[in-house]
Amino acid sequence: MTGAAGRTSASASTRTNTRDIARAAVRGELTQVAFELFRREGFDKVTLDDLAAAAGVSRSTFLRYFGSKEEAVLAAFDGHDRRVADALRARPADEDDWTALRRALDTVIGRYHEDPAGALATTRLVRETPALRARHLEKQLGWRPALTEALAERVGGPGSVTLRQTVRAAAALDCLNVALDHWTASDGRLDLVALLDEAFAALAPSSTPRPSSTPRHR
Image 1 (cartoon, rainbow, N blue to C red):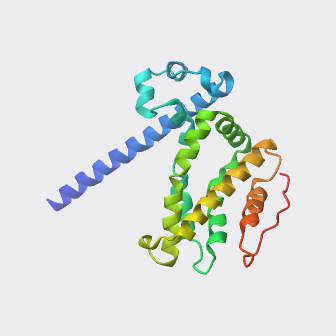
Image 2: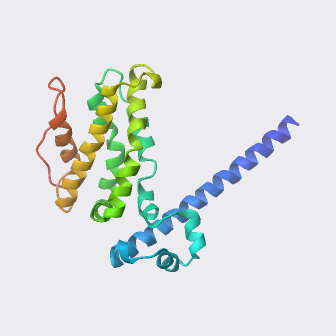
């Protein structure tokens, strides 16, 4: 019985994983279709019906994957909070929090180097569309508790969150946003890593070694 139950459980898990992979693939395709349409026609002019038609699916099918137009674009940022928090927990224990936060953010800016043109287009669309920018900032607020808890775990446990840790997490996200704004304004010509280093250096404690603040061109 135990063997049969185990095989049944493994089979169910495999089916679930397969469904998750398939769903993620469809979401990725729909996101790409939506992004191209938004970029060509303008976010405000495109309706959910337009998105469904462009993707070759019904409106109800599209809505099963995304509850709104905004979600179709911002899905590209899903999981960033978890990746940054995990990277933060993995930083050396003797590294100061501010440096650890800076290094942890490398996990999300990596994609800007892997596909700079695509990342620039996505970032510009989000930052130049009021509805997208507002929704993105709202979602980014959800990163703060994840980063704060990760900072707390570095010195004790999630129950020991301090005001200082919360402020540092919020400031780190602000540094990321400022760096992205400058990078977007330069049409991607400036080095995002250098911009983020400079933003962090502007708020670094005097005892923390500051990275070079000279922006480098790609």
